[in-house]
Every structure is written in structure tokens, then in C-alpha cells.
Amino acid sequence: MTARVAFVFPGQGSQSVGMLNSFANDPMVRYVLRRASAALGEDIARLIAEGPAEQLELTVNTQPCMLAACYAVYSCWRAAGGSQPEMMAGHSLGEYTALVAAEAIALEEAVPLVRFRAQAMQEAVPVGVGAMAAIVGLDEARIVAACAQAGLDQVVEPVNFNAPDQVVIAGHRAAVQRACEVAKGLGARRAVTLAVSVPFHCSLLAPAADRLRARLPTVAVHRPSVSVINNIDVAVETDPARIRDALARQAAGPVRWTQIIRAMSERGITYVVECGPGKVLSALTRRIAPELNSLSISDPATLSQALLALGS
Image 1: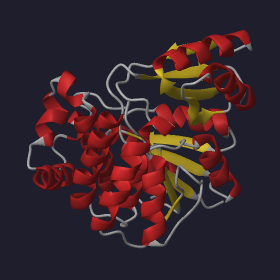
Image 2: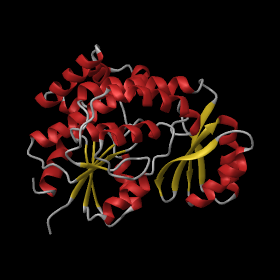
Image 3: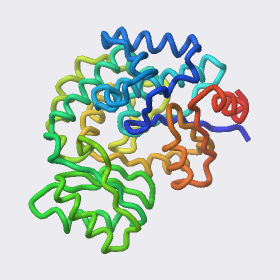
Image 4: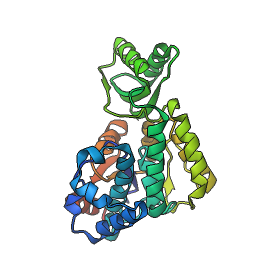
């Protein structure tokens, strides 16, 4: 049976200093990083390769660096003879990488755009006001109920539906802490506060969504060459105005990753390939839809394995 392939791109959290070092001599990687660096007016190739980690971990640096790194790995796949996938998606920030890989947004426009997005997100909520936590071992309905019970006069919401038994919540710090305790009382195996400076994807980020909505009309968006399933609606959009609208809403709305992977399976996809640093999404694919074949490409060895597995 012919493989039907989707590529998925990770978001913030999968970055690490040296994440492209195994591709250090690859001309395609160097080319992509030169383009991204020129678009930002700074040498992000050096930051990716050498750090320091504290600089790479800053949201305003992480987002453009991850986009460039993931797109560089995808470019290596294509340059090595890898076929164009049938479908794409990206987790949060990764949705922008998917749109670049699908030729909907040029790399040179996407890199400054995600830096703007990062700044808008960071500035929407003062450091220390918000928090995020991962709830493990509790179904979505009870996590929604825990947030409703714990909110009181503050915001706490499910924001990343990562897998059937893993949902990330975000909002005001105290409300997130209360929701963690309620969730544990409802049977959650764990409730772990995440080390982040921004409560991503919750309604506290509405100011960031508004700033993105104002900025996005200045960015050239084209009809994607590959179907991209978006985070906010689990929908495939082809109209540039609707793509921009979904990106703006995504900043203050949930990432519906479980539904995205299930939608890929329902549409006949047989292989889901994570493209870029880390293996977070590959692990989630196996938990969400074990019937799918899950691969990851993060270095030349895994690139060769994927080429062999997919007959490219």
C-alpha cells in the first residue's frame, strides 16, 4: 500500500543549543539559516549552534530560531529527494513553519513575523502574572470542569489538547494552581507547572491576538501548495484572509493537537513525520492514534531512515 504522508512541525519547547549541529556542513541548512539571519538582521545560526542557552530560551529568540531550524530540516528532506507530503500541521509556533513549508508564507516574511508574535505574547501578560501547567491522566471533560471550578474571578483554561490523557492549562498563576489541586482531586495522575514566562494560548493573550491581527495584513500570504490543518479550528484553509484570521485567533486560543492527528488519520494518512528538533510530537502521535506510523527527522541519520521507510 502506498504511504500517505503528513509532516508535523514542533513549537516552542523543543529547542536546544546545537540542535542543528549534526547538519553543520549541509549546504541547504546553511542556506536557510543565511536567509533567516538576513531577514532578522542578526546571526541566528550562531545562536542556534553556540547559544548561550539563556538567549536561545528567550521567547523572542526561540520562535524565529525554531521556525528556521525546522524549515531547514524540511528543506534537507526535499533536497534529498523526499516527496512533498500530502498534509501538514504544526504545534502552535509550528503552524507558521508548516505554512512556510507549504509555500504560503515566505521564510523572509515568516521569521520577523514570529518574532513580532513572540514580543506581542510576552508583552501581553507581565512576567509572574500568568502560568501554565500540564495535567496528566485526566480526561478533557474533567479538566474543563476543574478549570471552571477553580477560576473564580480569574482566568484558567485548557489551552493545549496534546493527547487524550495530557492537557495543558493556562491563565492567572493562582487560578492555575487552584485548578491543579482540583484536577488532582478528580483523579489526575500529575499536575506539573511548566517553566514558561507567558501563559500561551489563553484569553489573557487577547492583546497579542489583536496586535497580530493588525500586523498580518502586511504579510503576503498565498494559497498553500499542501493542505495545512490549523490549530484553532482543525480546518484546512486556502483563502489568505482566512489563514491570517486563524493565525491571529490562534495566539489566544487553544491548540487542538489531539483532533489534528485524529483528523489526519480519518483522512487516510498512514505516516506522520515530525520534522525538526526533538521527538515530542512523535510521542504524542503514538498516544493519540497508535494506528499511524510515527517517524521523526532531526538529524542526517533519521533523515536517511525516513527516506528508506517512505520509499523516497
